Length: 194
Image 1 (tube, one colour):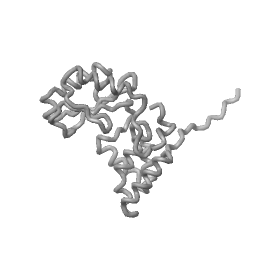
Image 2 (tube, rainbow, N blue to C red):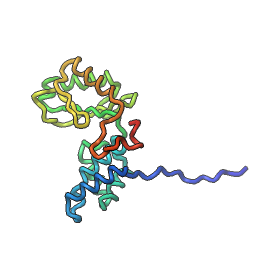
Image 3 (cartoon, helix red, strand yellow):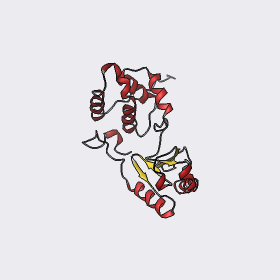
């Protein structure tokens, strides 16, 4: 019996879309050539948006290559800042403020309520892949506590079931994530169903 040839399977190396490449090129014009590392945070944000809301080791390597950095320089930054997701996330990452004013106004109850409604636990994803719950430090909207952030949008005064339900209804109704500034022609093909 002949054993079939077993060639190693390798996933395609991630690549930035042409629109993201153009945006990175534009960003780099703001920094001297010998200071490309200064663009690391915005380029990581672009990478996270381009590749499904998280930065895999392969995507971090792409960022390093794009900026002519050593991969460890990217890993150090992406693991330090909580705004970068290092594992797959749901379509909507709900960042729940857990600091004093929000706690005094019920962020613990809000977290428990969101866990019940979405089926996700803090640090994890909902079974339907729509939501990831994440606790974060101060979102600087203490006067409207408890507060959560989803991408660039704040949802405030989530101390009533009505307000929480309205937020979740709005999020569930979003077909796609919002189009990003550098995506003038719509979502990259690879993200159209994210």
